[in-house]
Image (tube, rainbow, N blue to C red; front, top):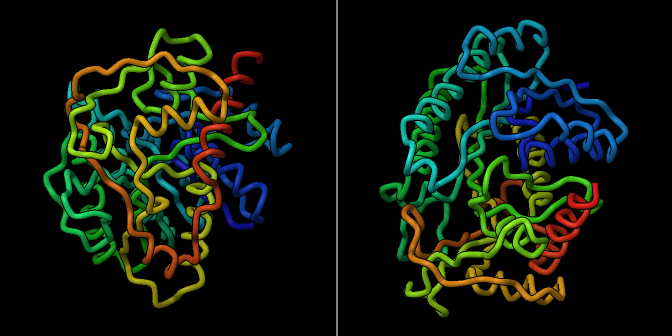
Length: 341
């Protein structure tokens, strides 16, 4: 049984990837998460859904010694999926040094252990934020990267370049950076989903928390952009589709001996959806009128971005399964179950 280390395993995407791994592979996921932006309750939810207990090491990956101890205890790790990072665009604008320290130092330490313990496969959680503000859409993996609009986005650009340099000099490992667009939704059971530790910065939990009464209103940050309805456009993709793509990426590295040392792949749907369209879709699938208002633009936000999916389909054979209605209805089911739990 292959042992896969998932850093940030209690997080939103990490937890869904663990479930996907437990339900659809014979691999054994182990987690490293210090709960700085998550909760240990997540592992209870994983067990409720899968019936399986996941080992977690409550380690700060910026601590090199503690990180190495995970590998000493598990010298047979066959792959790493590195999710662990701070991810709030507005917070990164306000607190850039925290983001540079956490997101970069943790990656350095995990890569050092991957090299020392000869872990053959490494999947990096990247982001469409590496593209910056792009005029020509959709973006593909060959689109030149612009200046990042936030420190968070810049940490992902740095992380990718680190991986590229590292893979060229370490002939025991192959790496893939998966550039997510906007993960949304929740597991079909409604028993696990996104749980922001603080006031959410992402649109969908803003919407569901407002609809359930946790927040007073949704603020739409700007309606004067050069888009079809004036609000920002993003490529939203279901979190379970994102989770499945990580499994596909590991299988690709394991099976394709000709895979390059470092590659990047976009994970989206190829469809650009505006913020206002997301609001209206939620109102449709939930039957709930949402309290929202237009606010000023938010620093760090790009105008519009969505993905060209050609390369990931060709490389991994991966295509997203869930449509926008399913994304929003699953997120709403999770929010309702969270209130009643």
